[in-house]
Every structure is written in structure tokens, then in C-alpha cells.
Length: 370
Image 1 (cartoon, rainbow, N blue to C red):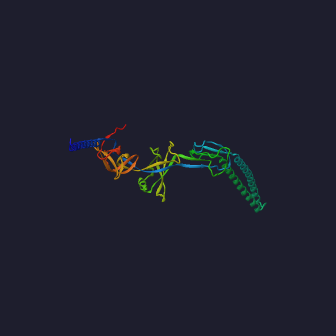
Image 2: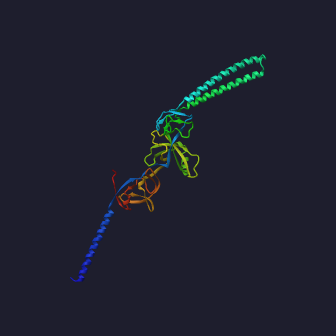
Image 3: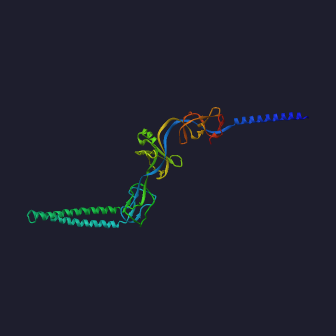
């Protein structure tokens, strides 16, 4: 075989191999094009959606009382355990009452003495009144006797006030709860000397049922609140700071009388019954205030909305199980749902999982939900 023939045979062999390679690539491409991508889908719905203003709030007690002694003395007994609930009027502390009981007894004895002196002065004034009529005594002498009577009466009045003051001081030896609430850490124990109006309180009581949640919203939301009219019709829900479902429902009860110029926000308060003690003073929560409703809004799951170079879009499944990439305008997103103002109509099917493998015109197969 000549060299020329060998070269011709090699060329023919190369052409056959090239044709086979191209054919295999075309078939592989065709297989890839016909491959169906498994996805999870949802149907766009039309429903009324509440419009909410969301903010981070802090739980505050309805009332806080720092209990302090109003008299000085030795603490005899603590009637509660720290951290427990107490009722209005419940005994909390007892201070040694003996010094104040003695002061009351002394004031009562002084009053008895002063009343006796007053009666004697009044009797003398009666006698001198008869004598002055007969000119047995001068009017000047009689006037002195009348003045002594007035002085004695004033001393008796002061004695009665001293008794009342002693009784009040004695009553301060029993310290009772001024409200229904929960006690904090105990700062004093039986046997210690407590002082009147000391700087540090003996215990702090917080009223936590009902309870406040305070939060701030931007001043632009004021118009929405004014449109509602009666504040008692504005519902507020709170959820844990780390996320999750609402744990309490309440009502807006307070709007501050001025916008904070430093932050451009206004402070609000909502009141919650908190019977189940789901809210605790000092904790932070997610507050959602419902200001209005959007009627017949088109809603899709939030995970259906993707973001690309041209903006937000969704993959819509067509009747032949292919997908089209549809640009959308999202009006709001809340509670894992996106409100679509343009781009998707109610009843259309959108992809909510598996978008990473999709391209325009891809074929899909819907995965069954387990």
C-alpha cells in the first residue's frame, strides 16, 4: 500500500470518528434538554392581608414599687419568699414595734394629763365668770383665766395629734404590699436594722399581669394610626425576639405626645393581659401592629421570590410543565408570604424550591409533599 493510500484511509477514519463524536454530543445535549428538574410548587392566592407595622419592643411592668421602710428599727420577720407572687394588702415585713408602742402609750398618758388640766382650767373659768359679774375679781384677772383655758385646749389638741402621729409610726412597723405583683430579690433579712427611707429598697415589686410592651415606630406611620380613629381598635401581637408565632395579643393604649427629633420615631405602648405570664419585664420582643388590610391581594410564599440582575422574579410553571422566568413587584413581605402587586395572577403555579437548577424553558416535575 502506497503512502498516498495510507493517508487517504487515515483521513477517512478521522472523519468517521469526528462524525460519531458530534452525534454523541448532540444526543447528550438533547438528553440534557429533556431532563426534568424536580421542584416544589405553590399556587398564588387572592386573599385579604393585614397591613402591619413591625418594631422591636420591650416588656415593661404596669407598675413598679420599690418598697422602703418608713421607720427605723430591727426587722423582725419577712413574710414572703423572694420571687413569689404577692397580693395587694399582703404582709411583707414586720419591724420591731415596741419602741413605737411605747411612744404611743406615752402620748396617750400626756393627753390624759393635759385633758385633766384643761377641765380644771374650764371649771376655774366658770367660777371666775360668776365672780366677775359681782365685781369680786377684776376683768383683767378673768381674762387671764380665759386665756389659760384656751392654752389648755391647744395643748390637748397637740396631744391628740401626737397620739395620731404615734399610731401612724406604729402602723409603719407592718409593711404590706401596695399592689398585686411579683417580688424581686430580697435585699434585707430578719435581724437587720432597717432605716427610714433608705436609699436601697427592701424589695422591688413588679405588676406583670397586665403588662406593657413599649416600642417605637417611624413618624411616617402616624397617618396610618390617625386613620384608624379609636386607638382601642388597633390590635398588637408580640412574638419572641428569636422568631416564631405570636405569644400574646393586646391593644394599643398609648401614643406619645411628641416625635423624638433625634430618631424621627414616636413611642407607643400596648397593653397585654398576660394571664399566662408569656411576657416578662425587661425582655425584648417583636411587636406587630395591624393598621389596615389589603383586600384581594395576590400572595405567594416568600421563598418563591428570587433576586437577579434585573430585579426580583419568580418561576411560573406553564401547562406543558416548563417554566418561565417572570419579573414581579413585591409590595410587602410578612409572615413568610410576599404580596405581589404586579407579575403574577391568582391561580398561577410558582416554584418555591429547586430554583437553582432551573433555566428559562426548563422542564420540571413536581415533587409530592410528604
